[in-house]
Image (cartoon, rainbow, N blue to C red; front, side, top):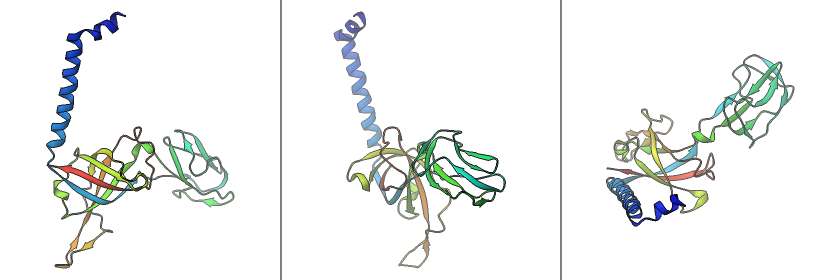
Amino acid sequence: MEHQRFFQRPAVQSIVGIIVILAVCAGILYWRSYTSFVSVDASIISAPIISIGPETEGILSSVYVKVGDTVAADQPLARIGSEVLASHASGIILSVQNMPGQVFMPGSAVITMIDPAQLRVVGKIDEDKGLARIKVGAPAEFTVDAFGSRIFTGVVDEVSPTSDQSSVVFSISDQRPTMQFDIKVRYNTLQYPELKNGMSAKLRIYVR
């Protein structure tokens, strides 16, 4: 009761109200400090692929998981010879070579998976389309084709230091190649569990 009465006091309510107003104003000023944005339409939700295979040559005898399964860290996934393949982290199974009797060599992938916590919105941007203005920590918004016009939020987590040589674009005016760079945007994966690996997205990154 005393705890409730404390927060019901006019002075306390006024202080709480002022704090909330200040927080809102700070948020507005933060966003307004970014005067424009850079659009990145070619984007996809993606996480690094984790490949799991044997350390020594052996014959696949058992597989304990299937595509789409959620696994815990150190969970047994398959057996090759006397070696048990286990997950290095919790995650989702993407592919399984479920062919008992097949021989697998060291380094070959029997199972692939991702860690959902590592999901990012990965976009490709031409070097002359605003790349120099994008900074790590800049706020970002994005939409996902599967969810129409719904807006999700995040922050720039990484700007690739090197170009993607496989995605060269040629300028019509002078035929010089225009390099593309990857931009990664981090978002709260617990807040947006509906976002899945491989979904197409469009980014809007706010810049000063």
